[in-house]
Image 1 (tube, rainbow, N blue to C red):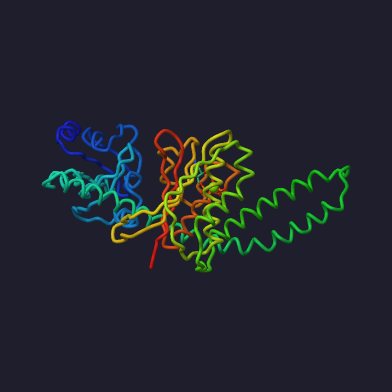
Image 2 (cartoon, rainbow, N blue to C red; image 1 turned 180 degrees about the vertical axis):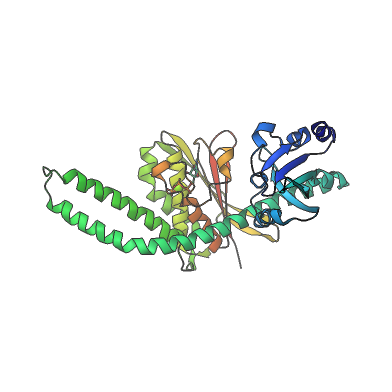
Length: 369
Ligand SMILES: Nc1ncnc2c1ncn2[C@@H]1O[C@H](COP(=O)(O)OP(=O)(O)OP(=O)(O)O)[C@@H](O)[C@H]1O
Ligand SMILES: [Mg+2]
């Protein structure tokens, strides 16, 4: 009777334990979220939500709810669309344990219905998308800042002893002859220690604490210089280059060393994505673009490749520190470093899949008076 009743009420309903673990959902909820019954059960409701700070806070309060509480929360559908739902949590007790009876209402569609004209609808959709993007960036930035502090602490401690070990190993390796039974072992120690030194160097770059320098620079020259540095890798992978330099940008102030690092990281990713032939398209143009309050003129530098692109599942994670799909060949810090440097320059970085195949990275540098 209980089950038929729950299935009969035409509302998305759910029951969780006090920590948000899903114990029951009705068919309306399956339809609402786009998940099958078996995919959703035993998960935590928290895992279906957009990972914002305030959502985490709401979930930490669940065990303490004493009466029906309503709150708007952003959720992911199975197809990764974000939508806002008004969620009402009602606590109840069964055999001394607390449970939550949860009703969902899609506020997105209600707000869309309320919008009088298509224009209103469009504006609202755009606002929602921008809000999602900003929330995402905020989330990413706070995570990156935290990882930065952590990395700085660890890397500083490890850097000196590693340098010393590598120095001694190189001394031994120079002295020892190749027929010595330990020769191979010493070479392996040397190679692996060098790898650790590289990882620590990346960590230190990532955790860089000094503010960027501000030097007047011709950004196109800097961009072309960075591409020139990568020519050996580009040629080795038989990659052709197409340049689409539309306007001549004005000179802007930036830290050339850091921005070169951004260009190199992104070009390296593109080259790695095209191990056997491909097309690297480099673009420079001036754009007028708005990010909520930040309307203005920007220099846009575009680097696109014809590699396999980034899967839907991973595209939201590429700026996460240590996220890599390259196994031991990547540290997963390249793009997090780029994002951090761009933020320090009041710039923006975006990565998207190109239509057809491949990845496109856009870097936006503000043009100020
Ligand atoms: N041009 C690209 N094509 C396909 N996937 C990409 C591209 N750029 C980035 N990615 C994906 O984003 C992930 C993170 O990139 P990131 O540069 O931060 O780290 P990494 O390249 O794996 O390691 P590192 O740069 O530290 O050597 C990559 O592992 C890859 O899955
Ligand atoms: Mg990389």
